[in-house]
Image 1 (tube, rainbow, N blue to C red):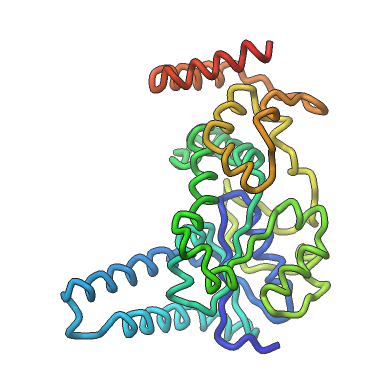
Image 2 (spheres, rainbow, N blue to C red):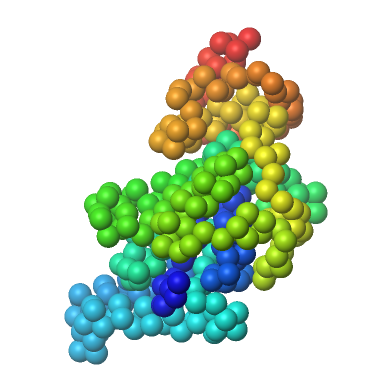
Length: 318
């Protein structure tokens, strides 16, 4: 099928599986997907600034709101088109995690674009972010603020997954829901064919078996030292990272994750209540006493009320 000028955007919290979805789509015969373009959120924000200036009358002598939108939409197409033409495919999928943060605005700017939200269990995302932060520390590099500690990791996941819901009228609108597609990392891994067939139906393209083996294709991706590695690019679909939180999150870390993420964990059906905090079945959580002590001290200085809840959890546990 010729997809014309449609664009697929892929977004999600870092470490949620956006790279996996990018590679899966890149393995489709009609879709190409290159390295992260990065600047789409900035383009959207500048477009919104232009609209604001029109409404203020500052630049209304030059063009109106519709003309501003048309020109920014053309800008996006002109920036992505050279790559699509080089790859000789009818459709391009642009993956940048931060795309998710502007999906409600992107839908207005590019109403024909598809918006894929890759969702992964926040407990596993936090566990993965903690590992990335540790890689930075071992290399004596500055750790990005968004993953600096378990609190930051938890807040980052919550901020990303909640972004589309922040404008409920837009999110619930027929126009948005027609183009917005949620796909779970766990579903891709555990039931790939059915999940990818669903994704293709929503994208209005034919399913291709090649999507099941993205590791057999080369992908145009910039591999960063800490966030990505060759295994992510070359390995087959694997369940080894599902439920990772059971092995690595301490009780303190679980309580903090629940504090920031519980609402969204329930929204997406990963948990029913907070019973998972004390779950030990089939697990052997790594005890990091020093890290827990530092975390507790930091929380005690900032939030005595939170500390009371933390102590109660320990009492109930032991």
